Image (tube, rainbow, N blue to C red; front, side):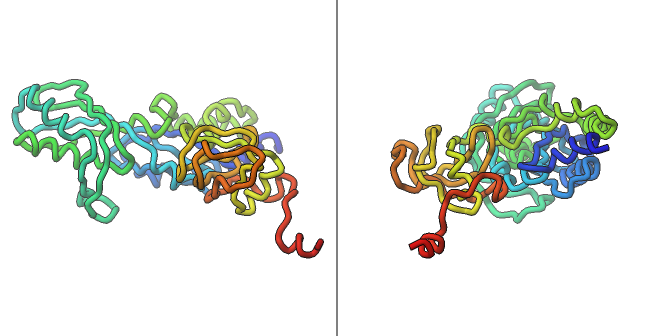
Length: 310
């Protein structure tokens, strides 16, 4: 019995896990996260990048301590396949010309049915690709900032064409580093959980991902074990504790690791080019701690301890 439950316990233990769900049309993102919570029996479950009920595609589910990364992962770029229905006839040349106008930084106001405040915002559209067209139905691939409203984008493209238009269907095909091919259905997850409870944990282990995978692209700093516990207590990382590092700039978000163990994520206080190994100087201020206090040896001293010894 102990073996059968250990896999599900591993999902939420330590630094948590990431599960990629291919969200179906119909339920809300919140409902999908609730179903994953009920399936796995883990109380702490969240998601990044809300998909409206009629929208399908990549939904990143965070489990256990990985929920702490929500604020970071919400900022990941997204990719969508959108079906635009024009309300009048537009030539291919004119349509391509209008679409090109919507790449770059654009102003958007969330639609009336949105759950967020309808304040004007700026989002960047990295690319819009016209995949195919059948009369007034236009299939687009959109790569954009998180928080871009594709429904509003389709509406504005239609207006710019002079005929009007609306989004007929939408699917998210990428969220940050994760693609739709990386996802599993809710049915597949349910089967994997039941097999794990029966003693076969291989299918579930193939589905569950490390939070580090979600942080792909974020610069990493590798530190000594002796520096880890101080970071877990909220201390800033000094260059004395650094073994190696990627390149990063001041104010960049940086992941702090001991080998493959994610300790924390913080903001760079200086650029990596100014790090002098073995010298004093604060480098990173952690704002999300992923590791428990006491896992690594406590070799640092508080000011009170220093005063007592003196």
